[in-house]
Length: 326
Image 1 (cartoon, helix red, strand yellow):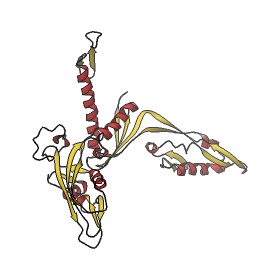
Image 2 (cartoon, rainbow, N blue to C red; image 1 turned 60 degrees about the vertical axis):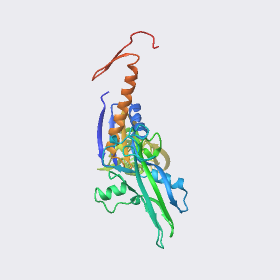
Image 3 (tube, one colour; image 1 turned 90 degrees about the vertical axis):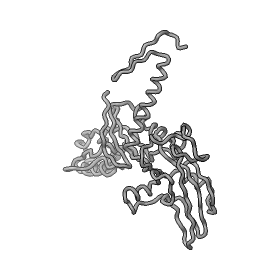
């Protein structure tokens, strides 16, 4: 098999790919790596100094942790807090692994005040919430902010926030992807059933098959059904069963015609990544590939303790010194 990747669409928030020439286990491993192993930054610790709202502190802390955070520099420059060698200036805060922020809002008006991610500010200039990043760095002033809670008149909240880097397998708040979709690509074959349909029902059948498809895979051109977008097929098989209620004489009958045959393409998949905004979808894809490669290197390094291993650009040659692994 010769692996190949075709880019269907690419934006900062969404990447759509057509991956072929690989087994589904490899593509599914990439999907799992995106969810579990791609690191990002998230609010991990919340210290409440004041909270006279009706919401519990656990509930607010959970919502704060799910807010996407942007970093000005690469994530690789930030250490994991459990492997950081820097001497911490305080119990929690560290310039290399843990970054302090604040949320201090009081509602002194007579109306309800909505607290959003724009009200969160970090001491480190390179870290900000998604809405603040879009406003300060890109100049987008009308971007919708992420609501956290509502303050009634007279209510206030004051909290210290500490952001850390980690992976989605530790907690979902560290997963940079909102959604990752993997599905086989469809092979759609239009059969010759239309030629055997009574002429008065031919147009009805064509209209049915094009309008029934929930993903608009088919269209009609010059009174013929044409496959417009096979990558959108979800294998519902509604196009496989076309009911015809009248025969050639116009008498009632219950007949099911099968004008289209839908099967899976071998080793070909549709793969899409939707980012939550903390990292671009393209960077998520590259980081997941790096994580899988790093895992393979770790296994190869571990095998070197048992086998004599020689790694080349195109293959890996392994030979055992003896039959014993002890």
